[in-house]
Length: 213
Image (cartoon, rainbow, N blue to C red; front, side, top):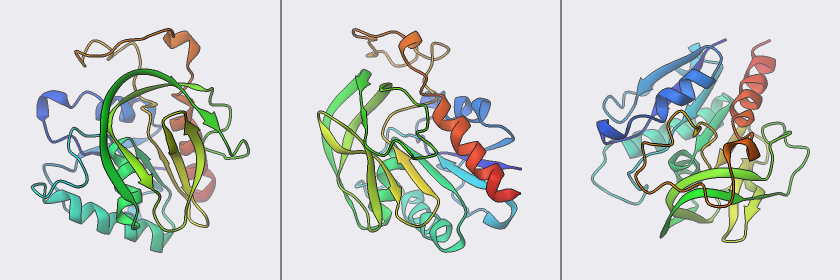
């Protein structure tokens, strides 16, 4: 089994989260998509993870974003499992006709309410998760259903109604290993011991493995 990890970070100095996704992903294959946006051959992968980014999906000066919208469509058509994280969450919903807007910067732990407790990717994931974002999905993409909310966003996590596509606004790969990288990060009233968000990636890998079998 091989899962393609696409790093969408446009600033090289900020590429500390994509490698963390690869580290936490069984048999992950890391590719900096923002530098080399060639559409990969999805036939050789059992799943795809799209990372976060300091870019915004509504910006027009990043050529790779249009190609990645096409990649989302290809995953939808081919049935390749896809997980979008933060920017990836926004990109997937945007590619399917949703709407993303600028909000305020959040860099801390937040509480989420899982509204689909039977979801395989959020299975066992607790309600405390780390976020690093300033944009929000305010209208989900076609076929995307809400599976978790927060007090400030009704579309915090989504999944497709029929395809193996999931998106999460939080960063399951953000752990103590990298918390010193963002200068504005604050744990707030929580600690990493309060969060098991990394289980999101483990769960997604399990979905990919079952489909590969």
